[in-house]
Image 1 (cartoon, each protein chain N blue to C red):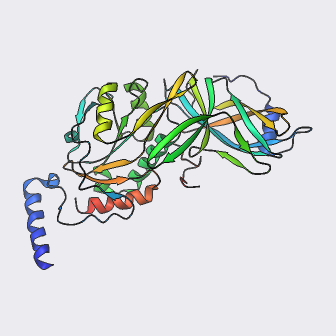
Image 2: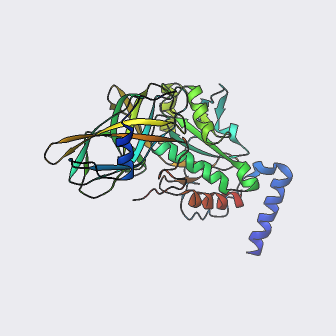
Length: 202
Length: 159
């Protein structure tokens, strides 16, 4: 135990001296999440390259130094998406100080044809001005969804369509390593608790 | 922006849960519509319906949308599924809630942005067990885009 502590202190010390926040998690310790799933052994979403509403290209490395919580949806969605975004806004309020600064919500649209950059920007900003939306061509979105193993399909509705889709949120550490997945049924308190567990050691 | 005139008295009666004479009565409470952002093409409407005799909701119309449908949201694992339903059963005396976690009204092809604080007129068509139809005019309050699942600021995800 003492040995481990010493080793960890040394590693942490090196991290602080060397790379600061970018040193990231100490993988020696298991992440004990109470509600979400530890995803440390999964590799998802490493290669996406999409655009934010301002037209800037964003990849996972664009979010190094923060802890992005990435999830998928579409703005014509009446139920799950606004609920997930409202939950994200509540989580942010529950986090304090540095934890709150680290938390970065990233919403990837599954409906790039209707979710124009303007609509996405206004929609996300209604929840929190720091939330980021990402979009791309329908082909790029299909590729990214596949990379995240996110299921989605268009469902015809009258002369238009709605979309059925996966609703899990994925949280990465400050170095872009996937750590945690949060199901849609968890409430903001439960999510915030697991995020604090992650942020404590990262 | 002025809404189309509606049968205000009827809506008020319905909202207050008072009986309407000579018909199988259905009352509507807590009707609200989620605000939209400019150029957003659709949004949802939510409410609680209570029928006095076994009935079903068979249609919804609104001047703010080209197409109005009732959708059912289902969760299958982590996949949120959405599909249109033609009717929603309203068992006698049992409040049926149309909320973001189950059945809800979809307003599609919005003709205008719906803004927080405004009222959106909705006309509900209810059919009783004998096939008699009644229509109910409701003024749904527009709540913030960020309004929680229960319509208030907290969320209840599991029913």
